[in-house]
Length: 144
Image (spheres, rainbow, N blue to C red):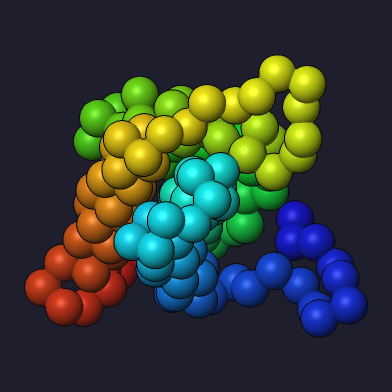
């Protein structure tokens, strides 16, 4: 079920989800390059994969998956293609970045530059695999 909001509903076009995911990856790269806040780098990595997985699932199933849990979304992708089992660990690692990077806590979240680079590499690799799955040969696969 898509959420209604002031600007309309969540898009039912998978490629718009992938465009937004790519934008989050670009934000993460820029922030990392210019010594931006590590929590924001990590959050954009999480967001990129959330949007990419939602786009993939929309393409494969024709329905929008609500929520932010990357582990859940990746498990749903595994049901469409068991090659996504390769990404379960990465989705779990990136999943931990959704809340903790956005809200203040009494215990500081320690994310250093090396962690940011690791998260960005995970997100870029996962995004590339999703994009390749959808655009093999330069054209989207037919819906199965």
